[in-house]
Length: 273
Image 1 (cartoon, helix red, strand yellow):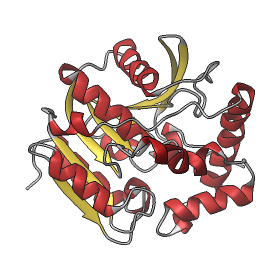
Image 2 (cartoon, rainbow, N blue to C red):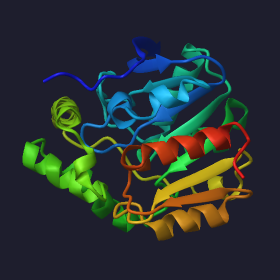
Image 3 (cartoon, rainbow, N blue to C red):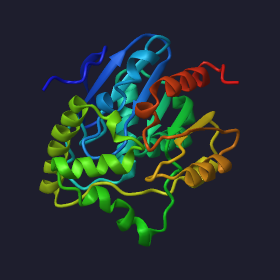
């Protein structure tokens, strides 16, 4: 089946120890699009409706995180700081410092850490469907279970998408096949590791002291990272703004791309009323 068409250039760069796959389009201030950790997620598929519209105003880069898409798989069990360092190394390798960060779910955790610990690297931060983690350690295993125990079958992927989307019909057949193929590669690497190489860091202290201008965008019907969680993250972040979209789940950029792209562009350009 044909791949989802993205009007961008497909590239690779060495970021630290990981050969990193990414898409690039446009010119101007750099914008990094950081994808979630859903099964099969990758920069191109998760931001297939975002790259081209934002590239009319910005230099847009959509990398695959470690082990996702076509970026090198982990060869050891990793924790959150490794994913953060990888993205910082990527930003430096592609000369995208400082950059705007637009990040969904797990990508949001990475972006919050980059912006909170290294504000000199970030112009503005857009967090999609993320409230900074912060679950009690005893609940971490339960929270990660849908991802750590995922088995890459088409039926399981359909169930995962039903959980993440308000309306799963937004996932075309082509996008579904891309997610499935990427998920097989992703979880094949995890099987060789003998475990799931991600944790849930508590980044609420970073949000509470955030100096980078921040916009939270959330789906009102999000069943993974709820609207209430987004409100709590927004409420603790100095000077933050919150934009909620109705009839929307975890991925506003895919379920309501025109509205999402307009709001993000306005915020990054300093024109959001």
